[in-house]
Image 1 (tube, rainbow, N blue to C red):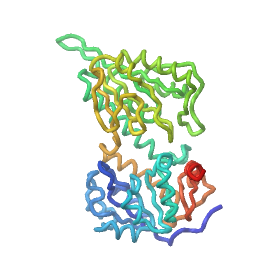
Image 2: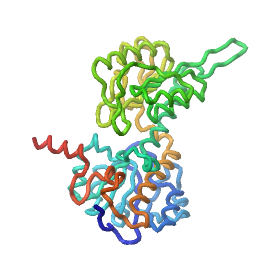
Image 3: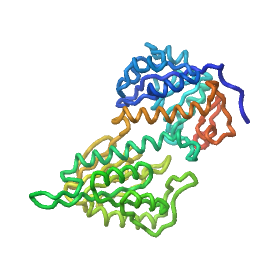
Image 4: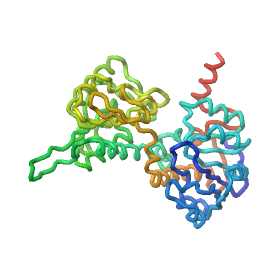
Length: 388
C-alpha cells in the first residue's frame, strides 16, 4: 500500500563531499541540480563537494544550489542525503531519525550497515539495488559505472602492454594486432569489447550465458561457446555453475588465454566471491609480457594471483587489480551517476513531495530500511543466522 507523503511540498536534498579515500565523484552535478531546482527541490551542496570531479562551487550556485560550509549543517537541514559511497562511521551519527539516504550501500556485502541504519530509523535506499526492468533503466547506476570500468580497463591494459593494439603496416614491416580476451559479457565486458575493438585489437569473449552471444558478435568479437546450461537468474545476473561445468570453462579459458596479449575479467556473482577463472597455471601459460586487468578484484578477483588495489608481475605477466575505476573518470562518472540518482529522486518525489509506494517494484527494490525495520531480504536472513 502507499504511504502518506514524508515531507512538505518542498523537499530539501543535501549533497555532502565524499569522504572515503580515493573517491572523487559527487552525487549531483550542476546540470541535474538545475533540473531538480526547477521542479521544486531545494538543493544544499557542501562546500567543494564537486571540486575533485571538476565541478566548482560557482557552477552549483549558478544552477540554483545553496553552498553549505559545514557538513553538520547540511545533515541537519536536509530531508534526503545523496551520496555516491556508503556513509562512513563518522557520517552515520550525523543521520537522524526519519532522514533518507540514497547511495551505493552494498547491502549484500555490508548487511551490518543496513542494520545500523535501521536502528537509527533512517530510510536507506541503495543504488545497487535498482531492479533491472525497462522503466528503471534511467536509474541503473550499476550499469553506468560498469560502462566506465569496462572502458577504463582497456586503456589501462593498452598502457601496460608493450605492443600496439591495432594492425599496422609500417616501413619496418607488418605489425599484427593485439589479441584481447574478455571474460564476462555484462555491461563492463561489452564496453571492454567495444573499446578494444575501437583500438584495433582482435577480440574474443566468453560468458556462461549463451544469450549474450549476439551482443558480443554485434561488436565485432568472437564468442567462445561452451555447451552448458544458461546460468543467469531472473534479473539477468550470472549464477554459479556446477563443478564439472566450471572445470570445462577453465580449460576453455586456459586454451584461449595462452594466445592472448590482454585479458579483461569482469565476472561477478552478486553477494558472492568472484568466480575463479584464471588459476595460476593459466597465467603461467600466457605469453611473456601479457596483461590481465581484473575488474572483479574487489570481490577477490577472477585471477588467482590478483592483489586488490595493486599491480604485480607474476610469470612475466602484469596483473592489475584496480579498485573503483569510475572514480578515475570522475567528471563523466559523476555526470552519469547524478542522472541516475536524479531519475530515482524524481520517481520517488515527482512534485518534490516524497512518497514511498511499496507496491511499486522500483521502490520496493531499493528501499532497504524504513521506520526502524529492515526490509532487505538478504539482510534479514543474515540477521536470523546471527541469532541462530
